[in-house]
View (cartoon, rainbow, N blue to C red):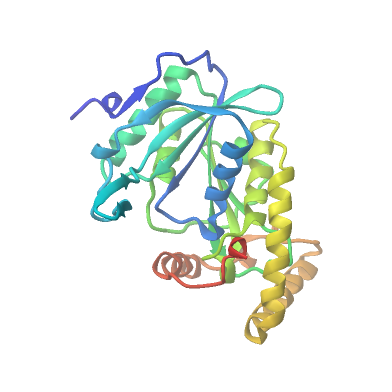
Length: 306
């Protein structure tokens, strides 16, 4: 077996990162509402950053399954949009360093890749690893968005209610990384924001805001979100316009609101963020929703395209 550390190159000028947090999000699996991608874009647009490590994508990706775009100009090939899998160094609003691992999810060598990430975590003295993405759920956009939290130790998410006792879903590198880190004694947390299923195929910034709030709570990083909040406000207004103009969608949203409010009233709560597993979809229903999301390629018009 090849040494996992051969899968990446590290910059020669990396500062002391002892006690830093590593955030991660990979393109290629599930990300309803583009929740994780929007959060990554917000962080990179808001904070100065530089690459401190780069993975060998030629050894990790299947180009034929996800063909990168190439640009043809008049009579020649002009550009190749090479995929990347990199580690960025950023600093929050008060100068605290943190790390962001993002890019294309590896198609190959998952175990070697997770070992490689673990070696970087141990090399830099990372104290906590946090992953995030969006999942489709039967909830309305007009009510508080929930988050499914999981971790290598229950103490890391003690304020979160467990939604499911046991469920099987398609595997992904982010989940495997969390699993392997836990097995080796490292702290890791994951957040899956619940996205209204009728918005799962669109870009929905409000759910990225929800993820950011949970990342801040879990890590203690100071990450103001004024620009993301304004983007979410505009997108919400466009979503509401589309709902009003479509009788079919209005009926779906109304039914989900009534279901949500009935559960909340029965539980004596204002929201379902801490609802019990009995009130949530079954494992079979969640698995079916996940499979549908991965297979479908249609849905709302993307609010950010307007």
